[in-house]
Amino acid sequence: MTDPSGVGIGWRPEIAGFVAELPGLRFVEVVAEGVPASGPLPPGLTQLRERAVTVVPHGVRLSLGGAEPVDPTRVAHLAAVAQRLDAPLVSEHIAFVRAGGLEAGHLLPLPRSREAVDAVCANVARAQAELPVPIALEPIAALVDWPDDELDEADFLTEILDRTGALLLLDVANVHANARNRGADPLALLDRLPLERVAYAHVAGGAERGGFYHDTHTDPVPPAVLELVGALCARQRPPALLLERDGHYPPAAELRTELDALAAAAGFPAVT
Amino acid sequence: MIVHAASGDTWGISGPTFLRYYIAAAVVVAVIVAYHRIRLATGSTAAMTGDPLGPQQIAYLNGGPQLAVHAALGGLRGSGAVGVRPDRRLTTGGPAPAGLSPLDQAIHWAAHQNSRVRDLTQDERVRTALQQIRDGLEQRGLLTNDTKRARARRWIQVLLVLLGIGVLRLFSGLFDDRPVGYLLLTLVPLLIVTLALRRVPALTRAGRAALRDVRRQHTHLAPASSPAYATYGATGAAMGVALYGTTALWALDPGFAEQAEIQRQAAASSGWSGGATSSSDSSSNNYSGGDSSCGGGSSCGGGGGCGG
Image 1 (tube, rainbow over the protein chains, first blue to last red):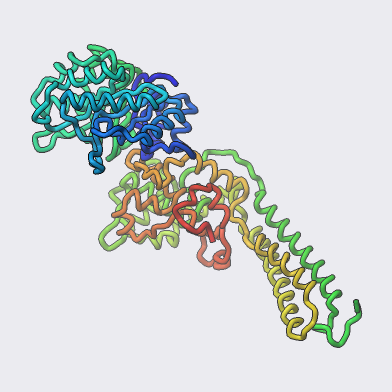
Image 2: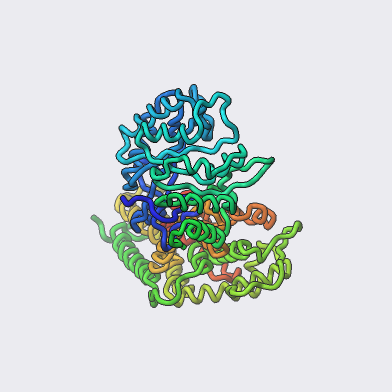
């Protein structure tokens, strides 16, 4: 039950053997929907818990941004997983993944309207009532803005955090992606976000395709994102940084180099 | 009860007399078979010392010489040292990389000669390397000894002959309308004992334990986790094949596995015979490592059948 600290990595079954052998690792994140609420835990996670590594469940299917109330069974599952893993907090996205009974299959951005803020805050409150631990909210990357946005990104997030008392899970790669794809300055956004509310930050790789930056999680972390990590840490260093890799896994040496680069950019001790 | 032989007795031996000798013989033979089995399972030295077991040794324990070859192939493919040509023959990218095991070297050489995967176990150098692995495992008390296993098998055959005689008498008795109740009561437990003891284990108890340990340490390589072999490297690929069969080789590089005509097989269902590497040892094909390859419980999942 220790808060996330230092450099962590997203635990995935595909690289469980690699994660298990990182000697300095203190913190991982696991996709909450991939952890059973009962029955045996994946063996790799059990080992990490035995090493007192903090495991944070990261939800992807709660649909906090949906117009309808969050599904109580999904909240119950997230709560059960948090309990099982003795997690200090859980995290979810400010996004919707289903609407009107249709599953989108991925995270969709909300229009930044007062109405959306109300809907998100109501859903977060419903989740908070059932969760045994605090929740951190993660804004997502979007290629385009909704046409009738009433609030800008910083106001939208600050409003939600203020009203719910939730923590912020800042995705540095998303900040980069959103700024890059809109021709905006990522530092300007950082300057306006409540950085003292950041529980931990996500860092992921991506690729430029068709004039857009795509937050793929299957490519190496580009230098621009690492620079942004440095800029973030210069303003207010988050307690922890987490490398997200979701496929096209590179050789172990490359993954270690990436973790080391992350530690160096943030001034954290290397975990490799 | 008439103890004397009467003219109506099957084979001219009275039922009680036959039963008495029959049960005595069955008990003696069953005890001898059980003794041999226990001796085999215990192993000669049972010393768990020395270096940790490598993927090829684990593969040999788990699935015999064939799986050891596939594990080595997985490692060589994982490091890009071997490839396959359109004519389904192996090929190499250049000279053998450093740090290869004798079996790796032998397979690399065979690949350099454009051998087929299915011919690898017949290759002279490969066979020598496999024999080395086998000898090493036997010396460490993990694998049972061929000679001892042959002896155990002979006694099992005696047990089978005994069972056959009993069944023969049972049918003769039934045919002649003689009482066969007690004989039947004797035959049922004898059949159960024979079924229980009929297999000669390829692995000693220490061998099974070693395999179980390694499997527990490498659950992340189970096909259910879709392991990232690029991350785990050549050793991870070899260990994946060693523990989970050629299914892992297919997951690692489906193009290679298909082109090289490697059968997709979970290790647990490969039914490894525990025989010597020589193909002339045909008698080794009628028994199986059976329970030995299924120790890991959940890891048995993919293959369906567990052993022979």
